[in-house]
Amino acid sequence: MSKPKVLIPTQKLNELADFLDLLAEIARKATGDHEAAATGGVDMDGWPTLIRGLEYVKDQMIKIAGPASKVHLLEPAALLLPDQSIEKTKTNRKRKTVKVATQALQAAESKANYDSKPRKKARGP
Image (tube, rainbow, N blue to C red; front, side, top):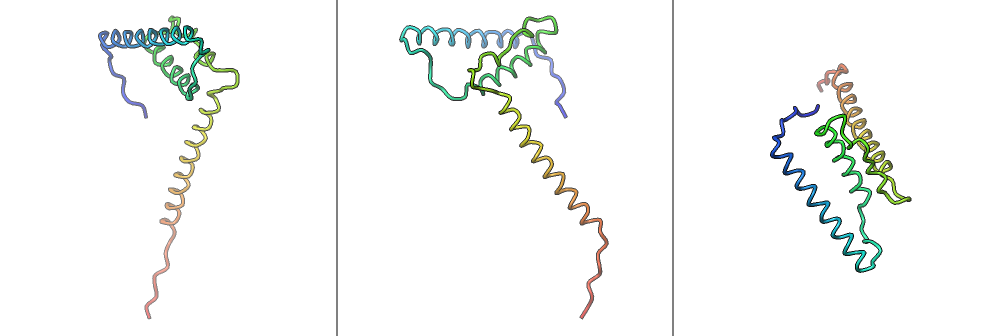
């Protein structure tokens, strides 16, 4: 069940835009620093996780900007390296969630079946 929608004031949308601008500025500066140092890039883990986060941000921006926005043209997955994928991670998480839900359902059914069976009365000595 999803939470009810909340009206986000335009002031908060402006703060969001400033926040995203600052992140873009930081990324551009870091890129320039790496180019100047001739490092060729940065070693990091979690790049697919970052891209998955961008997918989420894009989904939220679609809600803010509407159906005619250019945000629909963005493809965060295009930022992945050739040997990387976010689908595998999503699929594994989905499988795990389904497995846990299935186990909980089976446990509840087992308990319901056990509780609904008639019991023999204990015999006295």
